[in-house]
Amino acid sequence: MKTIKFTLTLSFMFFLSSIIISSCNQKSNDKDMELKQTDLSVLEKEIELQLREFEKNLQNGDSIALGNMYMADAVIMPSTVGRENIVKNFGSMIRDSITGSSFDTTGLWGNDQLLVEEGKGTWFHANGQIVGRGKYLVVWKKDNENWKILRDIWFPEKKK
Image (cartoon, rainbow, N blue to C red; front, top):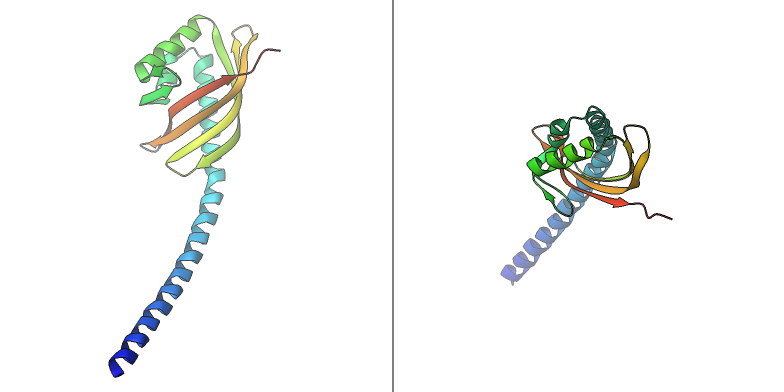
């Protein structure tokens, strides 16, 4: 009888301890979530700087600097794979006098190592003529303290 009572008491204590620990972890997770949400505004500013750098590199006609904004194994979907091909792609655009762009973030999700950015963008010829508008999704990845593009996809605006 004493063994059963001891086992029940021990089980109850274990159960009660589990609830208390679980409650403490929940409060800790809530604080972590608040911290991550606060940090997202800081990360948004970092991505904003990257967008302005991208625009500057395109305006300067620097396909190598544009390519270096991408991870070595990056993909511009659906079919431009790897930094070398991305540099060639931008070189072609620059030779076609597409040296202007403007990008605005409309959504940002993730953490301090991986972010998904949704936005609207416009591409321009050197003479200021708009050559394309649309929406985009970019996956940014932290690489040695620098944000680089891992995946990039563009959705052109439908012509009316």
